[in-house]
Length: 331
Image (cartoon, rainbow, N blue to C red):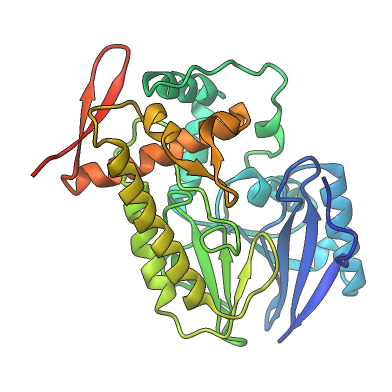
């Protein structure tokens, strides 16, 4: 899978914003958007795709179509650490881009992962197995090789102004996700926080102290209250009504909570058993119809809902040596 043939390499959004489509070869999402903005002190690029030759070629082509090269980019801002957004950052910094900005919480995650020397897969697999999903290790999975660790030159804080952009701390999809509000056009660069029609993934991939789903819902409400002329998402195309899409996502989350609770009506279950009682994707697939990798995402998302409900005292968690089970609190 690659960028659809009916879409051009770049789109001039207006207000000195250019959307550059960067391929995600082999991924159902097909492409990620890098956004190039002209600012008073030079060019800003928001997100950069994963580390691959075809991505770098697409970025260089997009810049050339705008009359620029990589060396003309003043700063690179990363919405979040996932490799399809951060992956090419090391290459671009090495090519002369002087400034790299992201949120400290996401850099802390990457720094900790580097110190663990890639043990994340075993940690995640063990966590999913305790929650009822056996995982077969994939020796040929090189997904996490699509980036280089490169330290930001700037830790971006909530509310910080960077040229024409105002940063918004919107945790949920990642611990340090950022959206950027453009003070010139009024548009919001939403990263993976708000997508349309895709529902962003919020998962609990290890035994964490944070309530990822609670963070996501709270920051969704903050973004939904913005006065904006439209959304520029990391995946898919621009859409005009950000508040409408936020309302849809909040409604989806509330419905999902109800479904999770109903799945526990007949007694305690593992997160995998709860996920097995739900429908997935927009077409309503059963859990057993999902690819094994997508089953992992489904269980991680179910866990995020369960943990959020636990913190609201609607669900309890019981840890046994081999299994974690969840039960509804009956009133």
